Amino acid sequence: MIQITDKAKEKLVQLKKEEGHPNDHNVRVAVQGGGCSGLMYQLDFDGEMTDDDKVFEDKGIKILVDKKSILYLLGTTLDFSDGLNGKGFQFINPNASRTCGCGESFAV
Image 1 (cartoon, helix red, strand yellow):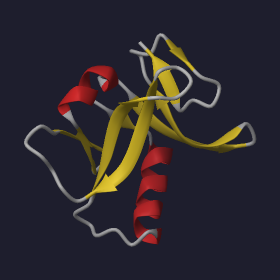
Image 2 (cartoon, helix red, strand yellow):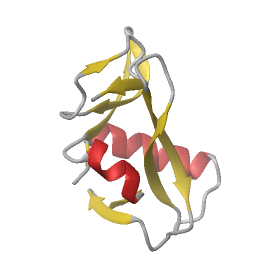
Image 3 (cartoon, rainbow, N blue to C red):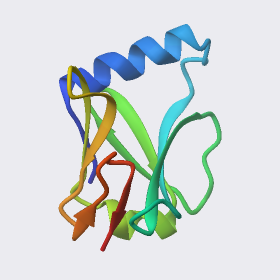
C-alpha cells in the first residue's frame, strides 16, 4: 500500500485543479531507471488504467502503480514539503537502502 500525508493530498488536489485535470484522473506513481542513485520516482496525473495497474486509495486519492514499480513502492508514504530546506513531493520509502541528496532517486 502507498499512503499520502494530508499535506501531499492538499497539494495534489490543488495541482489537479490548477492544471485542469478532470476529476477522473488519478495519481500515477512509478519507478524508472536513472538518477544518481539508480532508480527515480515518477509522479503524474493519469486518466487511463491498465490491466497491470494496482490501485490504492488513501484520503480519497486513487493511486495507480504499474506491476514493475509496486515491489519498489510497497509501504511508501508520499509527503509534501514547502519549507526552507526544500519544496516538493517527497517519497518516504522503507525499501530504499540509500537516496540521493535531492530525494528524487534511490537504490534498493
